[in-house]
Image (tube, rainbow over all chains, first blue to last red; front, top):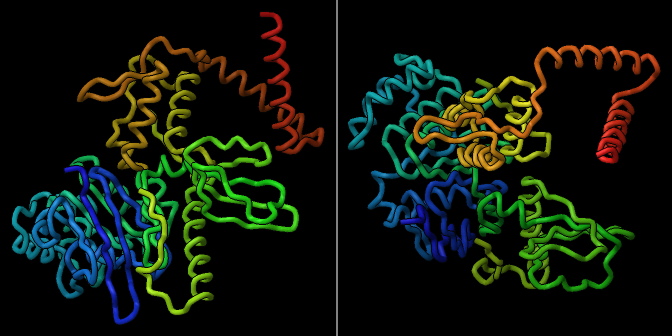
Length: 306
Length: 134
């Protein structure tokens, strides 16, 4: 089994609005995947569909080669803001998690709590945000999951707590060979921790792939103003373009080297790459809505690279 | 044992930053033949980075003949380093001279950028001269 997550035509609709639409996605095993996109892009929806907290309105999703319900014992999930029971102590959380989950590593979890200096008799409601996140991650890891899904785990943490959380997570990844997907809008954190990227915007997957490969195949081209939308050579796909009266700047994805001497070719940072795809989505939506409002998302044909 | 750090604003890929730090440590004599590099797990846990980043850096070092992995033990600095090793004592003396030189240049009104440009320019012409002789 090579894919930890496989989605085909996956969608979720609330009334007339599609929170996620036309999602085709294959995520290979043993990766740390960053799921990025603006608020409301569908990140939480995708994660909740993947762990069976939501049922799809269209299409299907498989995790670890089965349905989310069938694989629940092998999946770890930490929901947004690391929810814990405020009135229960840290030790209570461990006991209840051990009782509710077969194969829960209670000894390991207790050792980790001690190592992290989490006060075992403290009520969870009185823990700091960072400690609460560490407790939630400790519980998820003690389940010995093969696949761990984290929804914005570090969004509300200060920089130190964020670093400590990611240290704990990455150490577990090496130790137990866990596949991880975490959503975030902090690209700097993702750049360190992740080796695979999925960009979601406007309920659609915009681009997905190994970060190395994405960075190597995207470049910014700067040159004299292009008149009248000249087509790009084959093997080059336009992501975004902007123009002043004298200059054109393009971000392109390409399989072959860019040889046209009219362009100055420069590297695109991961952050700029993500922003380019988000901008492209905004742009295509703007144009479409100007033409034939209101559109159904499934009618839109966005190229999904994988 | 050395400890790595990452500069997120450098624009240099994280794996390359690790490679450079090892090269530099060897060049400065902080790492010698047989010294062990931090294990992948140690680096990952301290920097909160992806394990593949560390693996890639170590592979690159092996490829360059600067380090070798031993199954289940770790990665070690190997002999045959192409890097000229600067003796720590000579290093200290050179550093002292350079610091005095910088102070002198400051009094002459050089800012960081002009200093950097001057140094690079001299380095380039020195290299050209060496190659001309050889």
